[in-house]
Image (cartoon, rainbow, N blue to C red):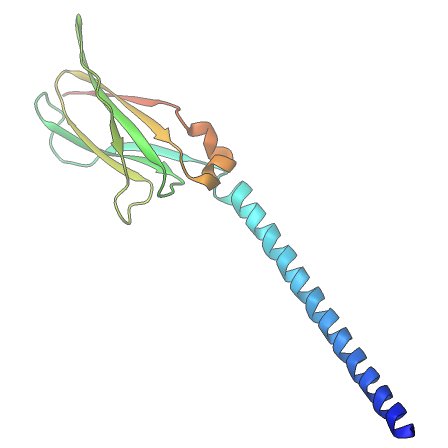
Length: 159
């Protein structure tokens, strides 16, 4: 009978040690989880979506003259693969309206945030329009949703 008590006492002591070890592991894992959740929340709410950079620039060397091709890039950062940009080039002539046709721009593989476009210069003044189309779920949950549908314009003057 004493052997059974000793065996039961030994099992109880051993199992108590395992429980405290398991409790320590659970506590450590919970702490890790809380830390990772905090980092992800900061990443989503601040670091990526705190600022957006917008830039438009010419990418070809042809002079800006009527009849020449104008190639450029519209840079919208931060960028995610699901986002797109609607582009329109409008020639401005006296007493004449040009027909506006929009094109949806997409980034090329490896060029996150850079949306290439081109058009033929048809008048002394061309107005270009860029309208971000935000479709990424992370962007829509954060600050970038404010840029969805906002039109950004620039004027290109032929030399």
